[in-house]
Structures are given as C-alpha cells and as structure tokens.
Image 1 (cartoon, rainbow, N blue to C red):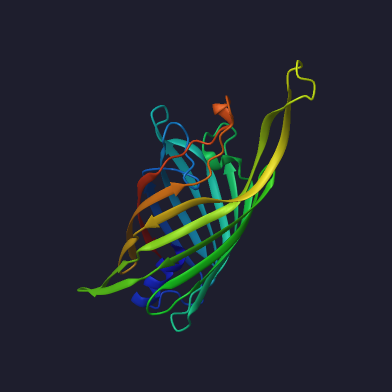
Image 2: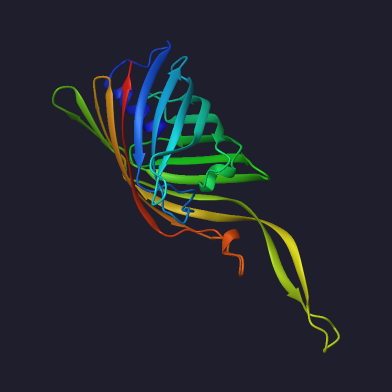
Length: 266
C-alpha cells in the first residue's frame, strides 16, 4: 500500500523531492486480524498515523491503535512505530520497501498481534504493463522467532480525472506463509496391554501457508490529499487447534473487511 500511494504521488506532483516532509493520516478498519486470526470479539480499529520523510526514500512513522468491540469503546491498545527505506522510481521496473517495526502494546491488550515485540521485513515489486509481481519476507520477534514470506500479483488502473484528480484502482491477490510454533499433546500407548497410555507433549515448529487475501484498493488523490478505500477478503489457513484447550487455539474465519482513510501531505 505504501508503494502504491507513492506511485500515486509521483504521478500527481513532484512533491516527493529529496527534502523532509511531514504527513498525517487517519484510518479505520472494520475487522482487525492477523493473517485472518481474530479475537473472539471481532474487533474493529481506528488508527491515526504521523509520518516523517527525511528524504524521498527514508521515513519513520507512528500509529496509535484504538480498538472497538462489544466491551471496548475506542480503547487505546498500543502504538506501532515503523522506520524504513522505500524506493519507487516510475521510470524503473523494480520498487521496494525495507523496514523495521517496533510495537508498544499495552500488557492487557487482547489483539492477536500484541505478542509481537519487533519485526524486520522487506518486499520487492517487479512492475510491467500486464501484471506486477511482489515477493517479501520478514522475521518476527516475540517469545520465539518466526519467519514469514509473502507473494502477490496486482494490476494498477490509473485514471486522470478533471481538476487535477487521479483515481487508482489496484486489484490484488496475495498468499502469506510463515512458521508456526505450538505444543502438541498426545498419548503414547504402553507395550503392556492393561496399563493406560502415557500423555506426552512436544514443541512443534512448522512452516505453513497462513492466509490468502484478495483486495481492491481504490485511491483518489487531489492536491495534498489522498483518500482510500480498500475492500478485502482474507482466508486464514492452518489454524492451530489444541484439543480441549480453546484458550490455546487460534480463532479465525474467512473475513470480509474494509479499510478506509485519508492522508494530507504538508
């Protein structure tokens, strides 16, 4: 999304010159999730974001997250800080984003992703006239270290409207995969028939598909303002289920949600 908005700004103005810039945005998402994993309350979220671009490539941003659900009304859950390097030359086919994420969630946060302590990630996109191909990877730090990858395709439709307005529509499809770590409990049978089996536990780590996701970002840019609406459909895969332990099992379902927001560049 960051690269797409950057493309819109490059097509609209020359505002991304090599000088510091400050940007402010507000965003809402109707379904907070982590690769389709959700809390049992099916929370929605609101998050303002402040961005400082030191150059056209280096940036840092911060976004406090506020959660809404049946028992929480606009409750502060924590702040996520990101610093990175983005390159996006309209004249070149390769774009990319390298970044570090540091969340500061409250200790009592019920968000699925609140266990995340830090993340290092990178993505590259190869652009052409027919289809853009994106591949990325990340390392997540929590109580354990997990590794993730993603791959996707999209095609950007760009329209110049009256009064120097640009409309962008970008149908996209992505697959996300990564390591999963959990404890597996099983019963081992004894060789002596009349003795009961012995319950055993072992730590398991495996690399699995985490989710498929379809989305159609719609962006309108006019002057210093950008407005976006992103309808999305996420399909979680390989949810961890611990027998007789719903508290340790992952909760998730196929989810349609919408993200909407606006940004102003100073």
